[in-house]
Amino acid sequence: MTGKEQLTKVRERVIESIAQNIHLFGVTPSIGRLYGMMLFHHDPLTLDEMKEELGMSKTSMSTSVRTLSDLKMVERVWKKGIRKDLYKVKEDWYQNFIDLFSTKWRTSISMNIHAIKKAINDLKKLQAAEEMSDDVKQFVEEDLVKLQDMLNYYGWLNRLIDTFESHEIFTFIPKNDEEQKNDLYNFIKKQNRP
Image (cartoon, rainbow, N blue to C red):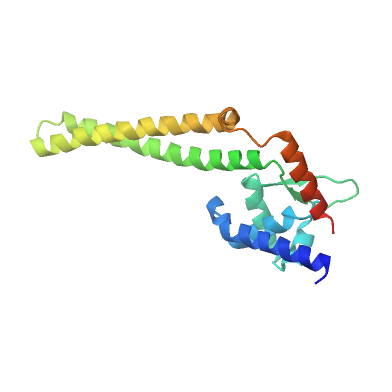
């Protein structure tokens, strides 16, 4: 097996791993394969180049790139002399995670807080009703306590997300030091050359 064949095999292993785990981001394995393939390209790619490499339709490719772009995992770039849109993987892994984590969790938290506040209002109206059995009153009071605990949890979760977005999280859990990052970056850049 030649060096290039070995390199291709190693890359394919990583790409397949990404494809199998990309569901954590709420997307399909085919989008994971696209992301993995783009990860190992030194230069930005056009939709046509991606289509040719993966054998997907241009429509499917466009939708997949838009999904990755919405997740802030790829970005459109400009290159002099090229009229077609070019895309490349965003290389700040920490920020990629923060963007994705924050977006997904803020949306879920907002939906849950809205539902809980509505439930609390409904329970308070029920609590004010004169005709209610002692059993129901007890359940209403217990539910109100549970719902307040949930609101407290979501408040804490919002503050946690704030530490990610402000990068304060790196005070508590530092990134790898710069030397390790540069060594790994240089190793990866060498591997990306055909």
